[in-house]
Image (cartoon, rainbow, N blue to C red):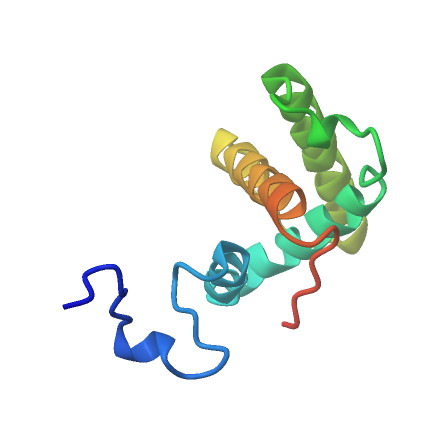
Length: 124
């Protein structure tokens, strides 16, 4: 018997179907498509703002990014989003949960850019 032979699950036998082990970035993008509409809009704006920070030598590619710097970036994004919402006369949450949401979306985007492709393009 050949015990060194690996038995593959059925879903890994089809071409292009690696499953969850294959591409975690694809999983993140898939679940990102299930976000509520408002969160999708915020995610899109976070991606646009991150495009300006996506360059060689950027702090987002440091081995251990500084938490304070990430929080500062998230707060500047919150300020921009609130300013845009005021100009468009649309309601935007004024509590700490909104700030936490933007911070999580920022960390998610940093993860994708560090471990996946340089820029992520979601189709919503």
